[in-house]
Structures are given as structure tokens and as C-alpha cells.
Length: 403
Ligand code: UD1
Image: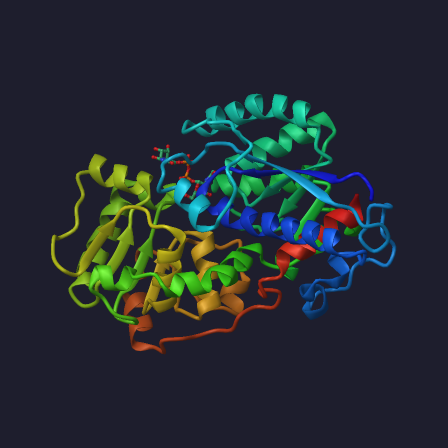
């Protein structure tokens, strides 16, 4: 059997954890299948057969390709420590059964420059020590960008899972992270055709781009049963389709006092008609305190600590409506066909609007848009193609073929 392909997986912030979990599981399945059989593992996976995606390249780039020589995969998991609170990190490791990270860079919070620089200086020696064949980064957070920069300068190949998404809004820190990461990555693993088009428009050659599907949905599908067992609705004394699930944490919504005040007013009015369930991101909780803003203490307002993954999935599935500025929630709502209002002027996930249940809104229109959703059907939209829970297998296949 050939030498293992050495991957270094990077996770740093809450939305990263559900993207690395399925990749780890796929690696374990791949290695187990190799041990049990002489048949190349990835070519026999059910997801390869059921995929709506293009078949794997008939000309693999190296002898490591599963189509020719079975190749085990080893991985090192690096947690940058960008998110560190138990409720923002540990709970996801437990619920998603992610092994303890091999390395924790423990960078913590800071300005964008400080956080990015700290990750870089701490990640470089780790790369030099482990010498991976690939650094695999996911999503669009500061950890994604910082580790990409380090690996690219050390001459280590970078694979970006969730490549090609664009909001075309450079005032969003995540957009800068996406553009720079994709400019440097060697393998761009995209969730949807619009992402491929964005990359081609930026001059990325076709051979670097692979449409693999939506990795978030792998975790969602794998955790559906456990989410169904969550008792979060009971704990809150609410019932399916009787509440609005709210998550808001982007600086553009919560860092401006006037903006946050308008949100609090609209949601307070709404809560007298339809309960709101609002787990508070640490940034949002801090800003409410800093600006002296509060919600009425009545039964309709459930302000919570950040929730775990299963509770959040259960609340998304059963909500009458989701109001969010998170990328992940737009996708999860679309999967459940739960009407979703996104409080942002744009989205890097347009398929959630064109096919899914998502609609953009503004502070000015928020009240009217919520009323309209509450009058409309309880389930809307379609689940986009490649949201099939089989993306991680395609990620590995692309990596093996490119190696
Ligand atoms: C980051 C991502 C964002 C993602 C979000 C999910 C970037 C640029 N942004 O934003 O794309 O949607 O994660 O949450 O990477 N804090 C804690 N405990 C923690 C983590 C953060 O209290 O465990 C507080 C700190 O005060 C910190 C603030 O939250 O300054 C913001 O954290 P940070 O990691 O800088 O960015 P997020 O807003 O969480």
C-alpha cells in the first residue's frame, strides 16, 4: 500500500466545526474500507454512485488516485482557538463527535489584524513540524485566511472547501477572506455552480475547480435523528411553527447602536404576537449591554446562551420563520424549507434565494417582511442540487485525484 496522503485540517470558529466533522468521518470510512478490502475505497462509496455531480476525472494526476492505487489518508486536526468559549466550540466537538484537536493554537479574540497575525505565527511552526501534503481549510473565517497564507508561502498545497462564494461586498471581512483564500488555494472545492462561475470570472483555471456540493449539509443529514431527539422546544415551552428563530451577530447589524436599537424594537413588537427564540452570540450580548438596550421581560422573548448544534437544528426545522445574518442558517433553513429572512443587503449563497426558502431584508422592511412571511405558507422553496449529505466523500476523491 502506498504512503498515506497527509492532510492538515484547520478549524477555528463555530461554523467551521460542522464542515470538518464530515471530512474526518469520510477519512475514517475510507481507511476502514481500504483495510477491509482490496477494492479502491472511494470508487465503491455509495455517494459516488448517487452523486448528481460530474464523474471523477478519468485521468488522475498521480499514482495516489483511488482509481489506480489504494492510498490511505492520515490527518492532523488543528484548532486555531479563534472561538474558545465552551458554548462556541467544545459543544460542537462533543455533539459532532470530532476528535480532540492534535494542536490548539489558542489564539483567542483580537482585532482582525491581531487575530490573523497570531494564527499565522503559531500555525507556521506546526506546518514545519508536521509537513502535510495538503492544508485543508473550510469556510471564510479569519482562521481560513491566516492558515492559507502560511501554507501557500511554505509551498504546501491548500484545498479550500466552500470555495467560490461571493457577496461582492468588501465591507464584509469574510468576503476579503474568501477572495484571498481562493486566489492562493490550489484546489477549489465548490458547493454550487454559481461558485464555479465566480472563480472562472476571476481567472481561476478549470483544473483547479471541483464542484463537490455543500459540506454543511453532510453534518445536517448525519445529525438529523439526534436533532429530532432534542427537547429544546419543550424546554422553552413552545411548539412547532409557533415561534421565530433569531440569530444575529454580524458587525453590520449589531455594532451600530441605532441599528441594534431598531432591531430590538421590531423584535419586541413581534414577540407580543409570535414568540421569538434568540440565542445571543457573545458579540451581540456585549453590544446590547454596551448600548443599554434590553428586551421586554415577557413570555414571548427567549434570550438564550449560544446553543449547541442539535438544538439549533431542531429550532430551525420547526420554526415558523428564521431571521438571521448567518451563512449557515440560510442554508439549514433552505434544507428544511423553513421560510428565512436574512438581514443583510446581499448573500454569498444566492442559491438559498433563487431555489431555497431565503429572502433578503432590511431594517426598514423587517416588520412588513416578517408579517408577510407569517401570513404565507409554512414550508417554501426547494432543496438545491448537491445538498445530498455526500460531499465529504467527493472532497476526498478530489484531493486524491489532485495529489
Ligand atoms: C466569526 C467569523 C464569522 C462567523 C462567526 C460565527 C471572521 C471574520 N468572522 O465572527 O464569519 O459567522 O465567527 O460566530 O472570522 N467571543 C467570545 N467567545 C468566543 C469567541 C468570540 O466571547 O469563543 C467574542 C469576543 O468578544 C470576540 C467576538 O466574540 O471579540 C467576535 O469573535 P470573532 O471570532 O472575532 O468573530 P465572530 O464575530 O464570532
